[in-house]
Image (cartoon, rainbow, N blue to C red; front, side, top):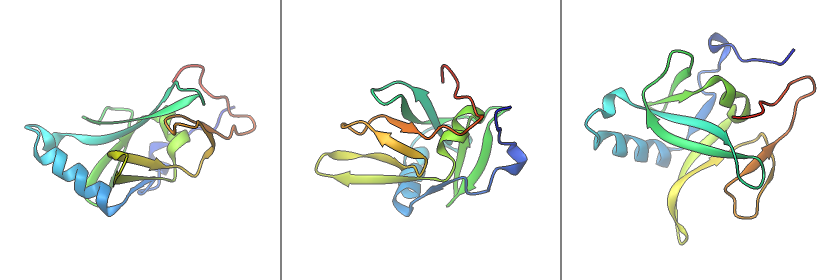
Amino acid sequence: MASTIDPMDTPQEAIKLTDKASEKVNELLSSQEDGSEQALRVAVRGGGCSGFQYSLAFDKPREDDHIFENKGVSVVVDKVSMQFVLGSEVDYVDGLQGAGFAVNNPNVVAACGCGSSFQVREDEGAEAPASV
């Protein structure tokens, strides 16, 4: 039987944000008309040369999402993605190669050379979804 995470068992800080990331999220949400109703959605999708890619977007929480707050930012993660991003930190970086959000994920065991996709360790007995 695959291990699942119960929303009630989700740690309050299942995903942490750095100060820079929370400031940028709040800045972006304040410029949107319905920003107060939005949350930062952190998701994992199939794709890329290593198997998975992150998807960060502003979205309204859904009924079956894990919902929590970190540094004043509402964060939502769907049930399937949570197993891949639990314990991660979202940062905002502004460097020579551009600016954007970066996910520092302790579950990653391999990443592609361009840094846009990753692999996670497969738990014994847990089945990875065929399509995320």
